[in-house]
Length: 159
Picture 1 (cartoon, rainbow, N blue to C red):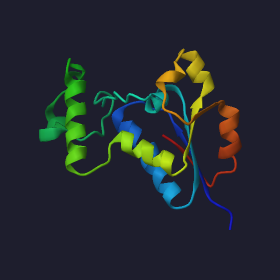
Picture 2: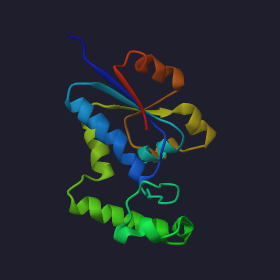
Picture 3: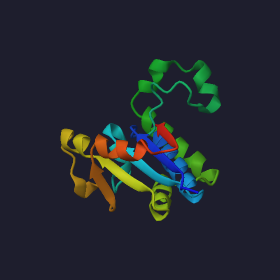
Picture 4: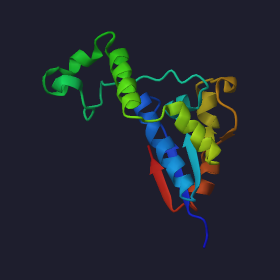
């Protein structure tokens, strides 16, 4: 039986959006899937050595808020200075208290499971990013390279 394949496109660079690609990729690899993640635009933040990612409650209406804040705190209030830092801190504490692996741990687990991490070369060039800021074992390629793999994949996800 031929090995199943999972292709993921990661486009978001916030802490909360960083988890799904690595959770899904590491799980698929553990189940025997050949797995690749194509990081483009803001998703490239997930490949940086220093993951100083934040949670953005603004524009994220499904985010559960403490003390029922989502019911009474106006959306505009989420733009207040310090709110992003507070929400990031709260999410990190909640995840740690529930035993959820850190993003760095999940990324490392994905690499150990031989998930291929592909950085969009066009976006790296567009944003004049320094590849020295990225972790090791990242492949740099364009969309055509991703389509070669995605076209043969059993599952393709856009995150």
